[in-house]
Image 1 (cartoon, helix red, strand yellow):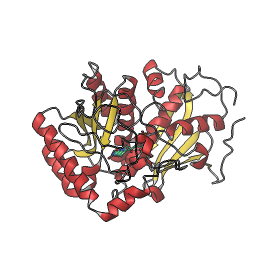
Image 2 (cartoon, helix red, strand yellow):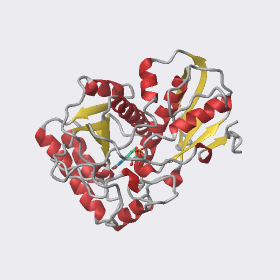
Image 3 (tube, rainbow, N blue to C red):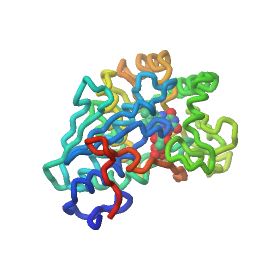
Image 4 (tube, helix red, strand yellow):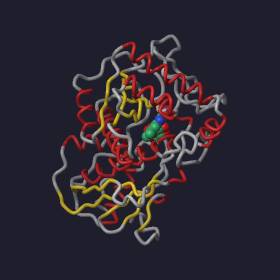
Length: 352
Ligand SMILES: Cc1cc2nc3c(=O)[nH]c(=O)nc-3n(C[C@H](O)[C@H](O)[C@H](O)COP(=O)(O)O)c2cc1C
């Protein structure tokens, strides 16, 4: 595949590629989208200059996500990444979200025929696809770059979503309290505990999904107000050694809610597109994000956040932004595991 630019590094100028090469390039980038518990709940079906993105219901979290909302947000993040990869090659993607309502798992269809020069901004975002990592813990007490929050809000609005900054101390404390209440409740719920354990591989595991110990701290960092993380280690001492001394102040960062006006599967997919645009934009400015979905998995807490903290709009994700030295690492299934041809035969995606 001589001319294919490498999604890891500086992409080369657009070059003619075979359709199979474009497909592989796009899927190799899309798998690096964030997904709940790194379930990677997606499959890509290729046929001609078109990729169909399916949600993989076998990877849905039955306890935490019975409606598949987080599964569809994850697919939306993969969709945004696929579209961005096409832009990095100078293609203009044409996208249909949920093109067949009779097939609710058929999340999107993306095709490419026309070309247009990629923008510097698109290229900058694409350069972050492999670099970006979910942060878990506190942040360094430094301000965000000026104008970043406005850019993130504008990016979310392109997908009909709203990024609401929770700046007021009282509201921020209320949001943190919701995360604490949910985390507490889920640690006491054996179904949630078992499900989380299934997506928390042990150190040294060869698994290419789930949240590996290299992506969280062995000793949870507390912030003020405290936004507790998920209990991936479950008392087994797994995780990274602390980066900072225990006495060092760790900020909770800038808290925000990603919301949508409605709560249908198309809104979830678009919230996922907005999420990945937000995360890559922040990352391109050296800003990391922590994600919290615990209270949005419990109906009564989600409803309370909706009515009290987001003006009746539907909360899809809680985010915190800040500066940090990023040590986390993650894993992904190889593209060959998630890509098949339109006739359901695996297409040949090997290099060479
Ligand atoms: C819908 C959704 C919900 C998530 N919820 C959480 C969460 O509650 N806690 C957390 O630590 N990470 C959360 N994440 C981040 C994933 O765990 C993360 O994307 C995945 O482990 C892959 O790691 P990476 O983002 O570093 O590539 C969420 C991601 C998505 C898309």
